[in-house]
Length: 158
Image 1 (cartoon, rainbow, N blue to C red):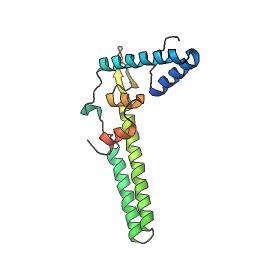
Image 2: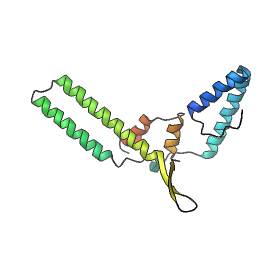
Image 3: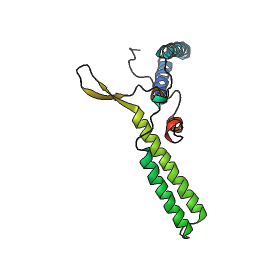
Image 4: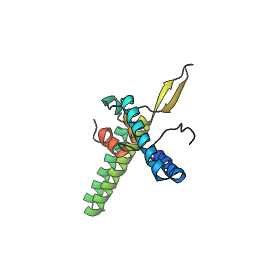
């Protein structure tokens, strides 16, 4: 293999090991996977990634998204009280509203922690992929997911 100089997410590692297996066979692939695993452990330890309260950023849009959802739920309640919708329809609509709201907040949160602005040496401000510990773990595919991040700070509201 040529030097692999790229971000190795869970999917990228899977493709790399698959390619190794097809080129080198089982024995060499097992040795490679073990070395890769121990290299990952070593660098993960050196990186010292930890989670702090500042890593969990509640989206600015959260309040507005929740207000819209609450208005929609009140409207559905009024339709139910007027006899326009049945109890089952009301239940399904309310669940749909909150599911959609949950997804919107999760998306806003991931977007918020997924990039950061930084200054270059010559003073320009650029936007780059985030070094937020929670985002790194979720984006890698190894640990954590957008749903778990949403629970931490999106909908449970740290």
